[in-house]
Length: 269
Image 1 (cartoon, rainbow, N blue to C red):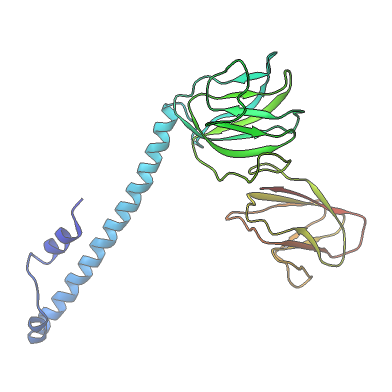
Image 2 (tube, rainbow, N blue to C red):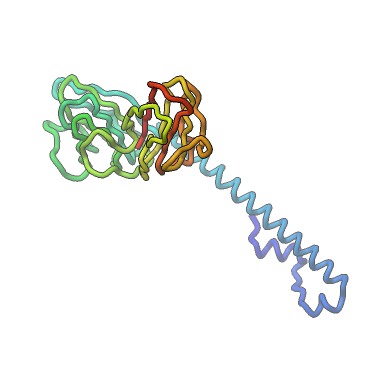
């Protein structure tokens, strides 16, 4: 690809035009403006070419990952594993290193230990490459390596997602609500006055609101909703999935009629 200076030199014929020259000859001014436009057009074309090349490189990278054992969404494994009689769940060595792991221990009665290494006689307590998820907890955390072993109670199962992309870790190691895991659903009773459906949450990754009523639910991406100020109208028995880029502020709602229904709200955070 020619450089910017090469492009300018080629278009201007390798000659530098001075201001005095343009003032003396109107024709030169017109020619100069024409050449300036040609330069601008050429630079624009180069910018488009660079952008297309960037997209091609990204796509080729994804294809390379695929042939090295990855799926196109950078996920090496997604599924449920069961702890064997010794309380161990192992994975085959991954062809490419992973960068993050999501563990949903919602059905586990004891702490799940995640170790970026092969199996050993006992679960490690702490150290490099070791992470713990409390009983019933769900976390997404950065972890790197090619081998992965989980330790828990024999016969219990855990959902695991292993990815090649890093993620922002959640705070703390235990608890029911973690990054990339559902925190609900929560129910908010039907009301003809504005009610809060979701508090502001900078870690929100997604949300779904189901209008479980016979009236319309007016949902607002704001602290207060009204019949004249709302974001979307969810019809009776309808639902609304938050779009991306994700709105992380407070969410409110108001129904256009009274009743005994509710909003069923599920948030991913």
